[in-house]
Length: 272
Image (tube, rainbow, N blue to C red; front, side):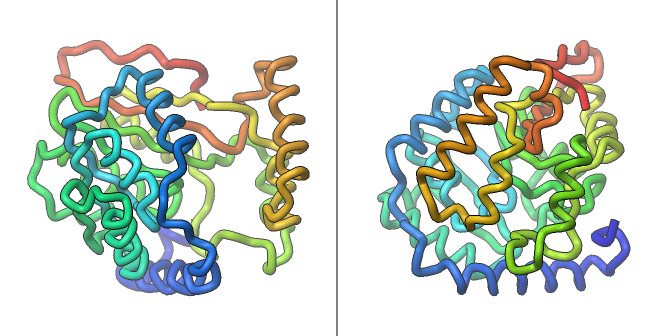
């Protein structure tokens, strides 16, 4: 994969520039306020995992413009948000102020592979679509190091499980692509690496069947009715054929930092 073939600092600069350029295109469309349904979705998702973020210290890796960081702060957490793009960090800080949680959100320009926090700092580490951008072994070791014993890491990622989706991804014209040229969906081997780092305590499961929804990229997600219709197709298929969830483009990785004498967790739904 290309992300492993380039110099670390060169990759950081390339991706920071990529996200800066993309941010310039969409900056006027960013709503700094957090809708109630987003807060409810994160709250329900956390509770389903047995996680209560209130009064917890959380690291948000690859925070982007800080939406998740601010949501977690609104739910009572103290959040340390990191991203390699300085412009993203500036918006994260601004978003925190707009939502009156600036005292609960601290934002830093920092790569996941080289965290400057002390070991055992965080109750939880989270991230949305970040691990497939980074050196998974380096990042995994750093995430494990800064977690407290008993802490959990939750990452929402795309994977290469469905080869049809991977083909579609590469056939997309450049004008429709949301990715840079170095990243690649998380691979089975990379998930195995994380499982080793976390001493076997890693589970992979799917939130839903996310397949035809990728066609919405062709419409640049501008038409609500089309988006809802495509989403309903995936939901219908998931209900009728639950096994299809394992071929979803998106999965959740749940990792736990436990003492070595503790038994490994039972996967929640599927192993990739």
